[in-house]
Structures are given as C-alpha cells and as structure tokens.
Amino acid sequence: MKQTSGPVKQFPLAEAALKDFQRTPLPNFADTENTFRHLSTRELKRTAWLFNLMGKEWLTKLMSGLGVKAVKYRLPLAKWAVKNTIFPQFVGGESLQQSLPVIEKLATRNVTSILDFGAEAKNTREDFDNFTQQVLDAINFSARNDAAVAGVVKVTGLADDDMLASLNDDVPVIGGDLTPYADLRDTIDRLDAICKLASEKGVQIYIDAEESWMQSTIDALAAEMMERYNKDSVTVLHTYQLYRHDRLQLMKDSHARAREYGYLLGAKLVRGAYMVKENKRAKAENRPTPIQPSLQATHQDYNAAVQYCVENIKTIGFCVGSHNEESNLLACKLLAERGLQSNHPHAQFAQLYGMSDNLTFNLAEAGYNVSKYLVYGPVREVLPYLVRRAQENTSVTGEMGRELKLVQTELARRVALK
Image 1 (tube, rainbow, N blue to C red):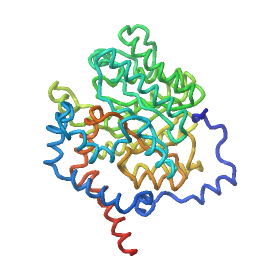
Image 2 (image 1 turned 90 degrees about the vertical axis):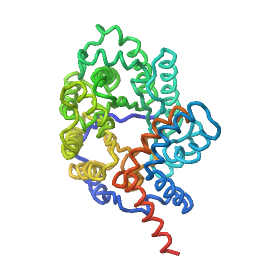
Image 3 (image 1 turned 90 degrees about the horizontal axis):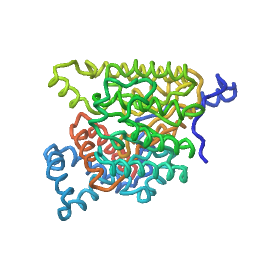
C-alpha cells in the first residue's frame, strides 16, 4: 500500500542531509533540452504544428461551436478529427487503461499522475452514481500503479448545481456541523465513500473548485472530509482559487480550525478559471465581484499563500498547482531557505498534462515532487475541457505563445547540433 504524506517530526534536517540538499540546484525552467528529451524531433514538430493551429482564433471558435455539436451528434469523422489533433496533447486516453502508456511515460521522467475523469457537471442521480464510481475506480487504479498518486473529484459531478447554490450562504465554510442540511446527505455519502477509500488505499484526493455561487457549499464539504480523513496524513486536498480576493484569508482561517480540531490542512493553490463568468454575473446582479481588482493582486495573494504553506509545512500539505514560473521558483527558494528537502512529503507541484512541460520536467530533474493533472475520458465527455484549453492557448501572448516558443527553441537547438 502507498503511504500518503504525514506530519514531519523533526526540523531542521540533520546537518549531513542539509548539506546534500544545498548541493541540489534550483530548477532551470529555460532548459529545453531536459524539458523535451523524452520527445523525438518528429513529436516536437507535431507539437509545434498543433500550437500553431490553436493560435488561429477562427479555428478555435469553429471547434467550440460546430465541433462540439458534431461530436455530440456523432457526425462522421468528428470524433476522429478530435482524437487525431488536440485530444492526445491534453488528454491521457478515453479510459484509465488507455491512459496507462502516458502515465508510464511520465513516470520515466519521475513525474507522477493525478487522475481526473473529465466529465462536466451532472444532474441526475444516475449521473452522480456513475461519476462517483469513476472516481472510486481512479483511486483503485492509483493504488495498483505507483506512477499514479491521486484522484480528482468535482462536487458538481456528485450533486446538482442548483442545490449547491441554494445552500451557499448558509453552510459553515471552514468546518462545522452539516447534519441540519438534509439536502446534502446524499452528496456527503458519495464524497465520504471517495475519501474513505482514498484514505484506506493511501491515495490522495483533490477536491476541485467551482464558481463562487456554489463554492461555499463545496468549502464546507471539503472541510468536513479533511476533518474526517486528514488526522494522520494529508489524504484530502481542497482547492483555493487565489484570483478571488477572499481565498487567502479563507485558507488561513481553515488552517486555524484544522489546528484547533487536530487535523492537517490539504491545500491545492491555483489562480482560477472563471474570471469572465464571475465578473459578468456580479455585474448582472449589481453586486461586488469576488475577483481580485488586478492581476498583480492575484499574483501577490498566490505567492503569499505559497509562503504561508511553506512556513506552516508541519501542518499543511500543499500543492503548487501553477503554470507561473515565478510562483514555482518561489516555492523552491522558500523550501531551500528553510533547509527543507526538495522532495518534502508535504510540498508538491502540478501542471496540466500537455502544458508547461518546462516547469514539470525541470522540477522533477531537480528532485521535487511533481505531477501532471491527467484528464481522461470519452471524447464527448472531455470535449468541453479541450475547448477551454484551445481557447486559453489562442492568444499569442498567452500559454500558446510561451509553449510554442519553447518547442521552437528546442527544435532550433537540435538542428544546430546536426
């Protein structure tokens, strides 16, 4: 059985171990040779072609409109077109078993996988039960395969969105008695079955974040699961979206309660994914937006959250879930400054599969605990996820521009060696 990370007993490290750590260099995120050494030149050229393709805004709009409908209604060649272009870049496979070659290839680079069944929100009891089983299957799969270390659960896959939103202003967000909330009983039972199995199997479970109008209910559920299953090790990690101006304080308050009630806080730190939707809804409802006033404010809170987690590493198990070089490097430097191992069991890093390989593989090369968030599932289920990846990669100043430049740099380096 795998062992999840537990509280660290001795600090600082023994002098000999600290000297060994000090000889470990910080990751070099500009090292394209190391980043792409697992890819052939042919594979690199295909990646460059794909990112160039996604840079065409008209094509991305076509995919998000006609493409989604074509796959939904099973039009001829629609599924084939997706599976032979964008699908293999961002998705492990249509099933766990089909994803195994990707998982094993990542493992050869000392990168583990966090398994994320890519289904969107569901709304029937049958859907909820099916999604629950998918997550349970991912946990069992992880328990059998050392290269996979965690599963992901979307509470919107376990419960109706409207029900989650209806309770949003009432539930105890940092933890408390949920028994009065009868509507939550089935959701709690499903989530408990997932977290219980993860605890028994020594596999971690990440609870995803959602929109603000249902997030407080999810916060309450996550706090309940952490209190139940994070007594001796960090099994459950909750997601904090730092593009919201209240999330840093919520994380600190959640940590204070965890210490008071004798459990470890699990924190996955992300910036966020619903800014346009959040601002639009806040404007329509004539209320203040939950989103930070500026990008700089988001960066400040994110980096402050990283620092807080490192400073409290005995009682917080955290994951730097970021594609931002500065934040990843900050976490590495803070660990070094405190004399902590690069592979400290409470410090993890993660990026989405198919993106930011320069972060992932150079962190792994330097000895850090790093994973890919590996989405899998049938084409029809994961297509909305793929559309979002394409949309965020459209801008030449965004992810696509950076990814493409790195690939082109490595291709030029290889040509120069010939």
